Image (cartoon, rainbow, N blue to C red; front, side, top):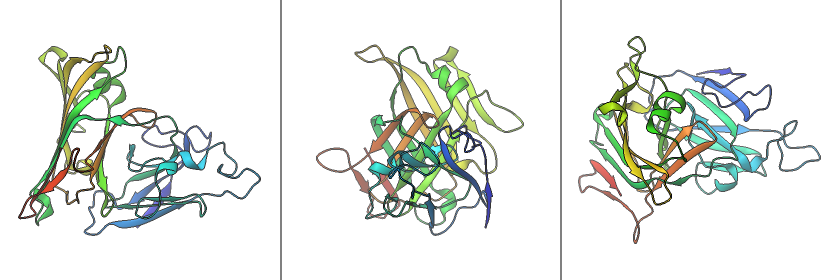
Length: 286
């Protein structure tokens, strides 16, 4: 295992030196490896001076701290991430405990700005969940309500898109930041415009896409009653373990830590729910 401290997040989450949004960022290795069992990580910070509830030598409130992996939020803000299960943020012990199934950039971020809104019509399909993990499949669909004047082209060329899927028992099972920019043949990833801009598709053809996320599609879906643009989203992944329990939820974020962001939860009857197949090979949430 290796740990390399970073002054600035590679995913534009801020600067630890200047104190702009970022408390801590580190690169953990080895990267590109999916662990058979989740690994527990504990982040801590000092809070011993005369200003309780604020990280020492910063202006960051403890309750606004949030953990990001590869530019994607993998926890709620500390104030909403109560203990009793992992993730757990303990403002008395000044610790944030998480589990991960792979290493990469992990960051402790001042994230008081983004309050997730529901991911409209969210559906999640996890299939082929029996061994081996290399044939597992993920499919997430839903509708994003964009800000006034925003477009799917803005996402593809300016902000990019973050995806995180996880639950209490296994922690984060898939997390990826689909950066902005047209498809790059050298990097083998990026966005392609289709249908005159009515559809944008992200493709990752590299050997080990983060979280196994290999494709995402954004389509124009008109506007809501308030005139805000709607975007249809389809995310597909494969090649890593997507085993999850019925508490699974998904987060979609445009800009890395100040939103807008969207949350898909499937808490069960009488609302949406997750159902596992009899053979245990699939989990369907809607």
